[in-house]
Image 1 (cartoon, rainbow, N blue to C red):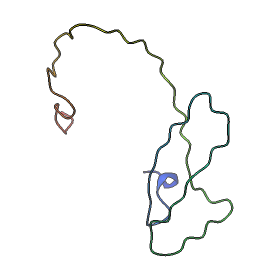
Image 2: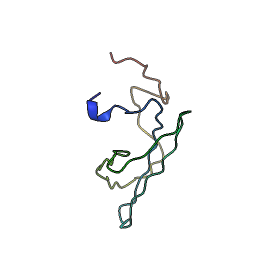
Image 3: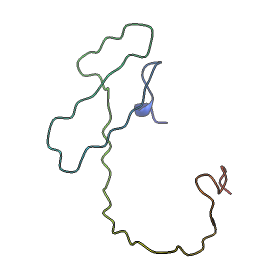
Length: 84
């Protein structure tokens, strides 16, 4: 993990929000002190990170039956937890 991504404090809570494509308002951050000591927020402190990611627009096709796959009927985690 790069230095810029390491939490700077011992208590850290990671949350994720998705901002709608057409949102044009102010973006705010909710802060919560999970530690037992008071925490002083000072001007200029880095408290959040914005990740801009592409949005894929897809077209779904409803079918009566799916073709066979190597996974068969296995669901989440059915291919194992290690990379071969």
